Length: 221
Image (cartoon, rainbow, N blue to C red; front, top):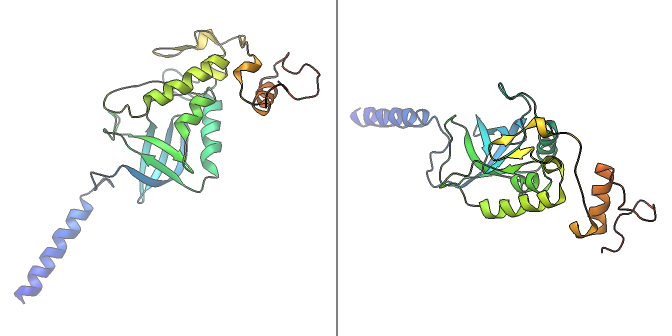
């Protein structure tokens, strides 16, 4: 009888301990975890399901224009950044979060690098000119150098958030500067004709298709 009593007490303590683990991160050494995306909040924030628990996730080291900020409202290209993130994740086979040193911000959101079928969401947003490098705080700086390189490449091409001078500033985005495009692109900004053609068609850029056959920068591979 005493043995049964101690077994029962031990089981209760175990169950209580499991239920008290309000966070799924019961493994302090966990660096990456698979998740299911349940909502796209905006370009740099998503909601996911981890072990049947809903979590808000803020993408580390990047910032996209707002879509419905209580103070800032909707900013130019915020919807485009959100649509880009949505398109990347909606048909993905696997979404993973990679953590740095600090897992949560002051709003209790998870801080993570997000991978969509092993492709970095942060890198794709930066590469397409839909995000800036921002909120760089130690010790969560693992990929900051790589991200800044991609940011500079997008700046050089003057695509999306970089198309307007002074729209992107150190403290965020300034809608008052979003106006007429100042894109000045050259074939040397691209590595392939296909890349240049896609860019030309997306932004309706003139002067990149000399013989008007629908293919830009035909001197490129």
